[in-house]
Length: 266
Image (cartoon, rainbow, N blue to C red):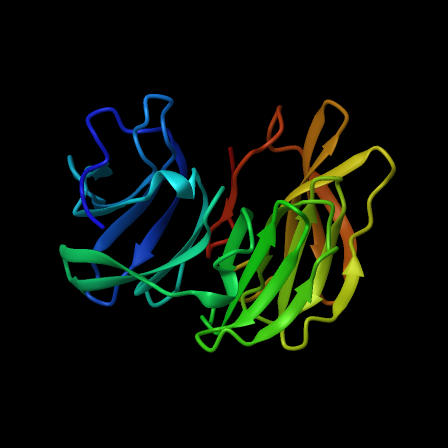
């Protein structure tokens, strides 16, 4: 399918950086529909780090059918060659990013195990690219081998509704959080749950990210305490909570962590 997203594109609902072997900076943006019937669309832009700006128009795009609904989440394989996205009506879809440098296009491929799984709040590839995790609006958590798609974990009642997830740097663990404020950690080689993170009765764990610098084995989570938002830290060698810091004055909706141990919340 081709075609443009229209002169009145919908709001951005998800996005990701795309790392490519040819050292080209690409950004993936997913847009939802507008009430005036502008369709959902995936767009890929080039990014110029010198002026910190995206290209004026997308290098390529894919326009979804109206029956697919709105884009919810997206994950890019560490190789930069494959993209998985979730929509409100059409389950999950797989795209191959073909071409080199700035001459790229999106090719949709079959993803049988995830075609009709319903809307997924979050998707994540492991750091080593060997696994894909999906977290459903309905609380269903899955871990699949990649690219064989062999199920490792298929837990329909992992959470009330999956809020966020992240793989550890060594791809050994997956942390997942729930809309009810709880959070769990899973072994990714067999899908066995390891622990439920500790929290007090007035706390809701919302977002989670593992440290990515290779030296500090920590799991960071945003925690809401009534009107107060803090970032708490767990030591992943024993899963004990070791402290917290107030970084924001309001709840975070997005969390990211750099390889140099800097935390970003928005």
